[in-house]
Amino acid sequence: MHLLRSPWKIGLGLVLPLIIYMVFGIIPIFISFYYSFMAWDGFSAMNFVGIENYVTAFQDSTFWLSLRNNILVVLASVLGQIPIGLGLALLLNRKIKGAKFFRTIGFLPVVISTVVISITWRMIYNSEQGLLNNLLETTGLGFLQQNWLGDPDSAIFAILITIVWQFVGLYFIIFLSALQTIPKELLEAAELDGAGEWHKIVHITLPSIRNVILVAIVLCISGSLKTFDLIYVMTQGGPAHSTEVMATYMYSETFEGLSYGYGSALSILILVFSLILILITTKVMGVKRA
Image 1 (tube, rainbow, N blue to C red):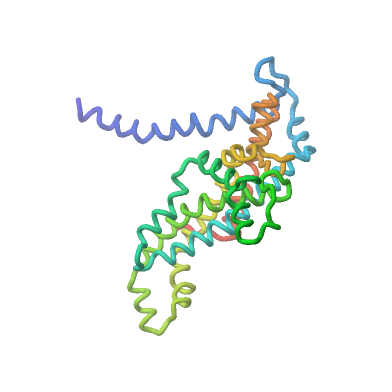
Image 2: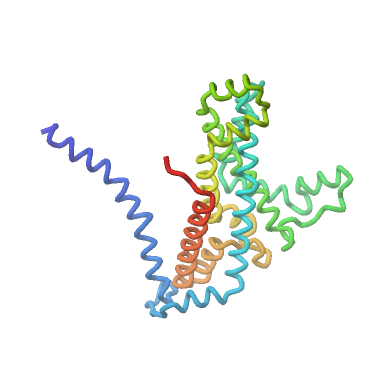
């Protein structure tokens, strides 16, 4: 009997993750798509409104502002997290004193709760007793002091610095793992041929981990488009929607404004925009399959 049941157990073990993914990942997308054609406050009866929610979104200036901020988050993440993470990986891939300590410190922000990070950085940016303004005053740069999270012109850039800092460690570990798979024989042969350090990085190291870099960029873009918790805790999209991104705007419209139909339409637009951006990225940068 045990032998007869084993194939069923194996089959269930293989299918169960797919079922869980369908229930919690795919089916909710179709439910949101259905809701996006409705006017619904979550309590009363639904009213079919067709594409009215999508038309409203495209005419909504706050939606376009949130989209712009999302693009800024993507650009800051790709141009900040990826190069810094790669640079740290190249540096700490060597046999230097304290490398393990610095690797641990570099990855630490990734495992710390986003809520803790948000509150900590909000205290750093505090306009009256924050560490940043106090540091500027101590170093004679008091004229640069400002209300970092209260000024619409500076709030989004303060948020971007926090986002880059939080996830640099993730890509640092990814790149460090990739670097350790490069055959040492290649690097030793290059040294015998008289190749310098920069030549080895450009012509051997980076081409060897090219696909890893491209996958990391895709992960970075997809993660940036889902940014929500850090911004929501630090500013809740304010002041004056200056730090609003599509996820926070969708949340506020859905659960605070009780516009479940409009919020569902925003969630579908986030999905479509994410897929388009990722497809363009993989096409332009040419991710190769093994």
